[in-house]
Every structure is written in C-alpha cells, then in structure tokens.
Amino acid sequence: MMAGPGGESPAGGGLARHIPVLLREVLEALQPLDGQHFIDGTFGAGGYTTALLEEGASVTAIDRDPTAIEAGQALVKTWDGRLRLVENRFSRLDEVVDGQVDGVVLDIGVSSMQIDQAVRGFSFQKDGPLDMRMERSGLSAADVVNTMKAGDLARIFGILGEERQAGRIARGLERARAEKPFETTLDLASAVEKIVGRRPQEKIHPATRVFQGLRIFVNDELGELARALFAAERVLKPGGRLVVVTFHSLEDRIVKRFMVERAGGQGGSRHLPEVHGAAPTFEKSVKPVAPSRGETERNPRARSARLRLARRTDAPAGEADFEIVGLSRFPRPTRAGER
Image (tube, rainbow, N blue to C red):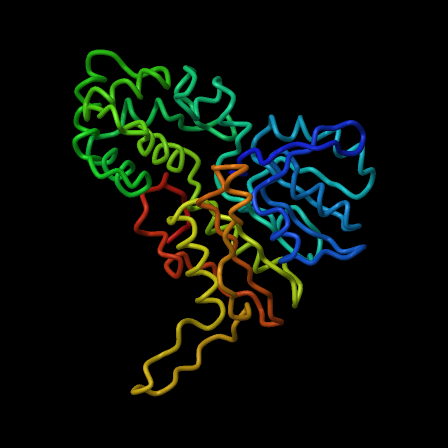
C-alpha cells in the first residue's frame, strides 16, 4: 500500500493506527454499512481495514508481504471474527473469498513501512541489500541490474521509471557491473549519480526513477494491478464498489482504461453506425478525486494520489483481456497464459 504516513492515533487494543492517504474519500466512495463484506486488497498497516471495521463491516484483507501479515495479527484479535487476514497477491482476491462482496479497495504501490526498512532495499535513503521484493522470493533488483542486457534495462528505466536518460544509465551500469556486481542500494544509487551527474540545485536524486522502474518490474506491479481489476469485477455484487488509489500516471492510466472500457468504452463517432458490444460491467466512472491541500501539507507523499471509483452492474464479468488496459507496452517478468 503506497500510503505515506498521514499521522497516527490510538486504536483499539492499544495498537498504533496508521492513517492512509485519502481515508475520508475512500470511505465516502465505499459507503460501508453494518454487516457488509469488503476486500482490502492492499492491507499494509491496516488503515483502510480498520476504518471499515469501525463502520460495522467485515473485511477480508490481503497482503503479499509476510511482514505485514505478521504485524496485522494483533488487529485480527482485536476485531475477533470480523477480520480475516490472508497472505496472497491481490491479483487473486477472487480466490480468497466465498461468494460476492460489497466493495473492493486497492491502494497501489509500495508501503511506507517497506520504504523505511533498509533491509528491504526499496530506498537508497539508507544502505541495504538491493532487494525490492515484496514477497521476499523470486527475482531481486540485484538480479535484474546484474544480469539483464542494457537494452532491457533501458526499457525498464525508461518506461516504468519514466527516466529520460535510461539508455545512458543502462549502458553505464552494464560497464560498471563487469568490474563489480551491484549488491546494495547505495552501490546502485552512487553508480547512477556518477553516470549522469547531479546539479547542486536538484532536489530529486538522479537514481529515483531508476529505483521506481526496478521496483515496479521486480514485483510486476502493473500486471498485478491489471489482474486485480479483473478479479474485482468477478467478485463484486451488483451495485458493489471498486475503489482504487494510485500514485503515478502508469497505474492511473491502467485503472482509467479498465473503468472506461468496462463501462462501454468512449463511444463511437457520430458519423459511424452504433456498435453494440458486451453489456457494461461497470457504470460510467466519476471524475478522479485528489487529496485536499490540508492532506498534502501534512503528508507530501500524498500529492500524486488519485482515487477512482466504479460501481458494478448486474452484467456477467467479462474476459480478462489485458490489451484493453494497455499492459502489453510495459516490460514485465514473463507469465504463462497471458496475452
């Protein structure tokens, strides 16, 4: 859950409560009622989950990070019987519940808890192993930068990290790793800074976008998001609400395309015959919601957050067609059975 720390307040059972980005707006979008059932697909520190429980709902919360699952066990005990915490990917959210649910909330990206732990390797603010794996298994960031060809690295940095000097950085890293493989976050950050330089007035470190691209690639974040949207479509009741909070344009574009396409598309030209496709599975989505000035002042990480809401119709769920969200243009780890 990519939610910057918006503050803490006492919670039940003596637990410190994490306040995630756009909490009030998320609750307004979901409109939870006593006895309803929701899925929090990105549990993190439990901010959205706790708020839903306080409204009388029951929650199935999911997180792929075993550390988050372990930390959340106290919350499970506090809300005896109404919170089920599952270690899994949110792309499989329809596999962890029986029947349909009233709402799904997804907060996309890496959590502040993960960023703040140097051993996880998500940030170069503190030195740590070059890891970045949310699940602590599979391909690590070190594996990627030490083994992939410069052309592939350039696509990761350029497309996923939106780094303008991606090619130059990738070629420089390929030369540097021949002398000594990259092992830590500061190894990589220092190498990138050496390759492209840094002006004294620059506030953003030159390795920031490289780290973003690596993290998104290692965890297949965009692929996971796309699969989670189709899973939510399958599990939501008619009238159920899908609420997604994103933090950069790549994620937001996927969510927007999904909601537009599943609501019947943009509509054809008035000069052409009307084409009737499959029945819309979602109502037309409303305009995205941004954080208030007060929230961004309290939590600068919230600045780029956008909330999108879509309501489920009673039409059968559609095929999981990844072309409609534009997933094919993004570099991703290979998965069998996908287009």
